[in-house]
Image 1 (spheres, helix red, strand yellow):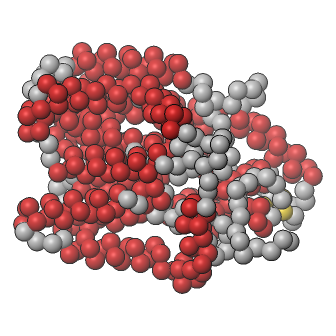
Image 2 (cartoon, rainbow, N blue to C red):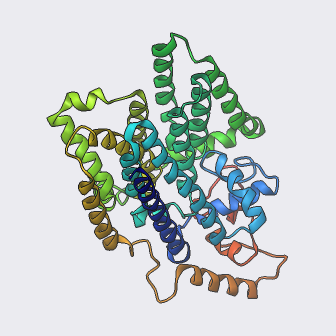
Length: 422
């Protein structure tokens, strides 16, 4: 009986993972291309040529992404298609880690299934995690940090590695920076609670990692770093046509609609908080605090952004799913939250996915990648191999196998005050 249960659990896990991979492959070929895909491809290519972010080219995020993506793309080629496959690999790893963490933190098999299904049945999530953006890589590092903190590794090393991974996640996408002190504070509290000692190993590790991620660039060109990471962001004005509070609430509404299993799981937890507050609080652990507080503080940062979108929140969804799955798995052992509820939630998710799967698709008679290939062919015929392309987006140059020309390696928002008019 136990053997049959284990087999069925494995089949459920494999089916959900396969479904996510198949959706990812579909969007790799048919998903819309983000405007700044060329911006990130160019950054990855430039660092592989020995250039340094900020000093040698415009780059508005932490330095991790170009180096991580640059290594595999140097081998397989700098193109949207290849970068999307790299994104899918990191995104899949983040999803699997979410399920593992949900199980590890007390949710058991039911909690792991909830976490996995909450992510793998969402077409939009698959699309965001194949995009040539920061989403899947940031989610991978952030989810890895939480998984390490939830593991059975010796506390001093668990704290150190976990904090370094949080810092790396923040050095991939800057909006995660507020999570560093929040999680660091919770680690300090947990260390004092368990053994009455300050986690010095974690502090030394974080300081060392922080120095390695910042000092080389600050030494090379401090002013460029400050402008690229701070000045360009603080100088942006909202303007009358950017996202208002109402539009931001619409994004939250989309998240509720297109992540139905996660919505139902969080709603279930909320219901138990209202009707059985003590039952829920008795099951709370410090790792719950890590997940909830970090998701809350980063979401608050995202809500202040002019261009807040579902993609922004996708980097938080694995951790959110891990927490929701973990808590719901614990509640299933002491409430009427049953497998029937899980099956019902899965059916709702399939319906919601059916309603939204076309949204990220390039809506023409020709797929996004075929359109991009056609543009690349036109450029190849018009531009000799030894010439570069000054275009509105570097993605077209890379697709044609040509190099973007100088300052045109970024995207339309590329600008550095040190450049002259030429």
